[in-house]
Length: 173
Image (tube, rainbow, N blue to C red; front, top):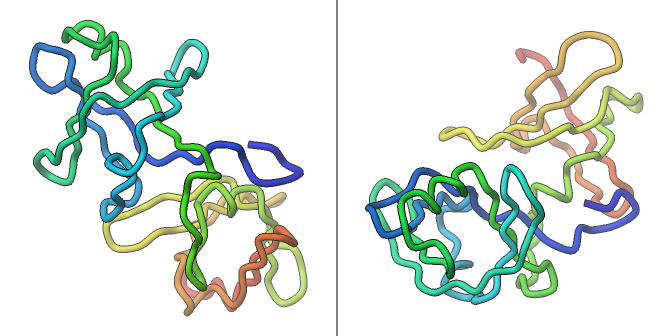
């Protein structure tokens, strides 16, 4: 991700364990309601070790428990599928549709300054998607990191272009 602007690619899924013996990958979308795997054929695969590479999606189908089962070229055995466990799947940002009001890509929020009562509280290090809600993990210069729910009770305003997130409160966290 470029600090000066938006990243060229947006992470959309994580590769989990292999499915079966013939190289099918179990993939968890960061947004379970997304159809991104059906709408795109060329993806960027970012393995835990090695260089990112563009891959052409051979097939994708819904699996159990919210997972997708995906076939990629060159992944034709359980051994080659295991090598990709933990990889991230990204799509070109230019291929993604426009966002609605109050919608953001997680990668747009990472690195934003968190502001509380006019003072900088810290910087958004990452986001975590819990089953109950998404949270901002804010690293503070003093004290431990805090998790702030990405909910209007806590978030007053997000300005991606200014790289700031104004918080209403952190009471009760």
